Amino acid sequence: MSEWALLQNYLVVGALLFGLGLVGLLVRRNLIVMFLCAEMMLQGVSLSLVAWGRYHGDWGGQIFVVFMIAVAACEAAIALALILMLAKQTGSLDVAIWQDLREEGQAPFVDRGLPGHTAGTQKWPTLTPAGIEPQADEDESNHRSQI
Picture 1 (cartoon, rainbow, N blue to C red):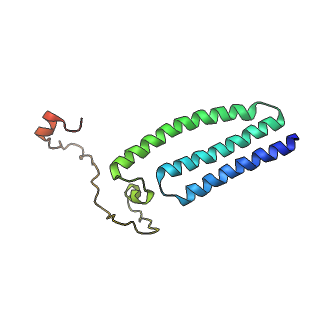
Picture 2 (cartoon, helix red, strand yellow; picture 1 turned 60 degrees about the vertical axis):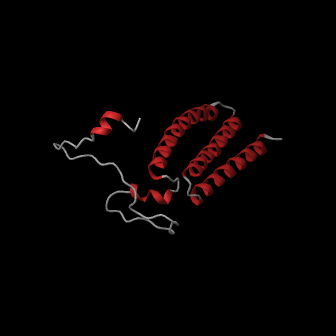
Picture 3 (cartoon, rainbow, N blue to C red; picture 1 turned 180 degrees about the vertical axis):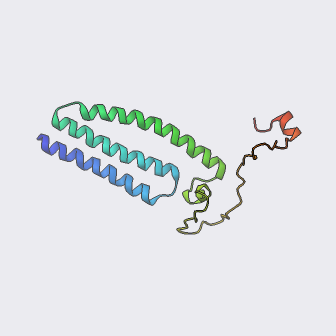
């Protein structure tokens, strides 16, 4: 098999991975599935870079992919921590429920209604204004039910 045909095969597989990831990212609403689709897109790009590096006979594509994998691992750890924290707050991984996190004054985007979800049922923590000491619950400070 010639180098040109091998490059074309690798690029086709990389494009398919990127395309499947893009479709999954745009269609799905579950955050973990969306995150995995973004990772699939990244792997399609990585495969294409390795193929171009092999075709040109240098190590540039492979070295760049090693750095991309290292950055993707850091990004995965941070993204999964954020997803778990937000899922604990809302109780769901559906992106449409997280409309409460938008900026103040922005109208919510509703593509279709969520069954059994009413807006405004969540209680988010707030900071006390500066100079005012918050009232302390004596039972909570003595027993610490959160730990």
